[in-house]
Image: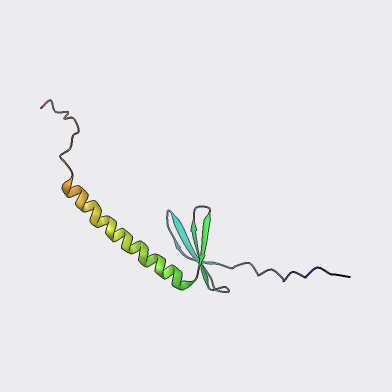
Amino acid sequence: MHLPPQASPPDPPCKRLILAKGVVCDVELCPSCNLFHLNVGATTLRLPPTALRDLAQTLGIALAQYQRVALLIAENAPPSTTPRTDGMH
């Protein structure tokens, strides 16, 4: 007689500590599995500390680059083509 393999018991649910809350996301830590839970809307990324650190660094670099590009775009933008409302042409 062949018996099916027994399933291992499920992992206990994470007991998360809220580390930060923002408008777009929040970050929680599960001390038992040592993973950060990055919640963005209905999506959760479970990241080890090294991955969260790399993500934070990469996002910081992207934001700095964006600020430089936005400044260059603003400096090189043509004069506003919005119609004047003061009666002058």
